[in-house]
Image (cartoon, rainbow, N blue to C red; front, side):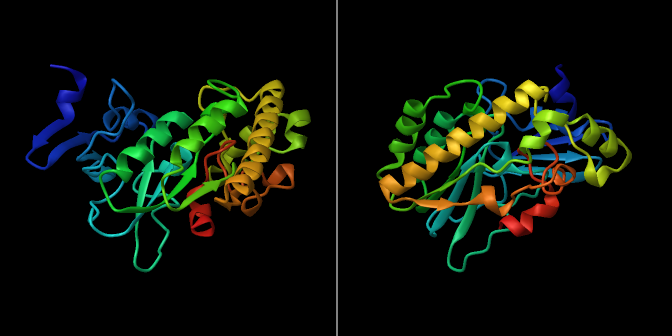
Length: 266
């Protein structure tokens, strides 16, 4: 018997996982992600301390089932799109006459995000694709403009494509000051908690690398949409941070948005 089987119940409608309250938020993701490829496990529901925490539909996307015959706008990306618990800025979007599908998967690089876009476009009535990707191709993985272009070009047969530029809490002042002050303040007040970014420690050197990479990607993306005639959603300026003390305002790390910012984004 493995650890997962202790908490898992197989039903005719999918997998249900019931976790004790001591399981932390980071560990929960290992119960809705395939160990093999990091994809979301279709038809799974994750409960913690008796409450539903995550729901993955039959398409392997976050949220409830959709009607595959109805016009759908898919929002594709990584964990910044996937959101927290049952919530995300994607879930807050309401467009009359359209279904909104959260197709974000944490940790995915650009090629996998595009793969999922193309896969779902062949399976459901996907009339529009919004792509918020790039975080995992900024300072590691494939980070060149040729790679970015080759992946985004793969969406050329989809009628409506919008790209989202990268929003971040990082500003130039953080290169000089680091984030220790913010983390110390956040340890005393949960609403302003601020953390390192995944496994990347936010040293001053890494902050500089991230800022340079984000600026380079956003510059590329602006030129790319102008060249291709696609649409640009300017998340960068919507969530623009200008003061060091405001870095935790919309974010709890360099790229993950607070739940309080979801309505603004939607």
